[in-house]
Image 1: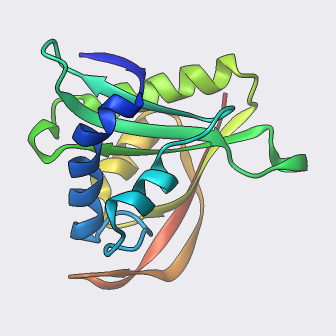
Image 2: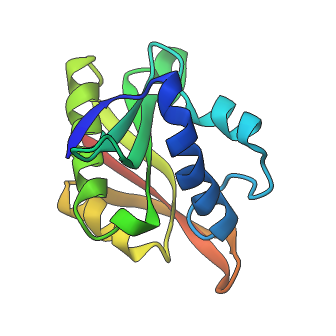
Image 3: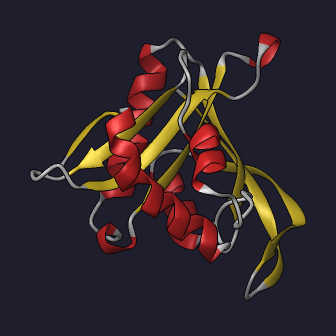
Length: 162
């Protein structure tokens, strides 16, 4: 697996991953009815941010990440990132590789920390991965996410210094 910057030519492979995650409605606060054009506008970061893809030896996109400043101005020293992995590639280390790459990239860009603003508390695979990579839950907004099966669940804010 190789991680590289996402290009316009990758979107036809990235979109089905994004669409699958949005349609499931259980891990992201994005609108599950977004068409491809809206999702593309939201997912593909403009510089100085970055969108990346994890690809296998055949060039198949296994997952994607986006990263950049969490907030502008006085908060711009803290990065944020989001990750999506294709259903077929889950459990194969793609999410971890994307997250480690994002941490490395943000460190090289001079960010002081990384913060995830809305990690769905029932997304235990992501929560545990982030904990293993040094993130801590600094707070949970109760019942802030309408999960399609679990009802209203909390959103964790997770943080780590770089």
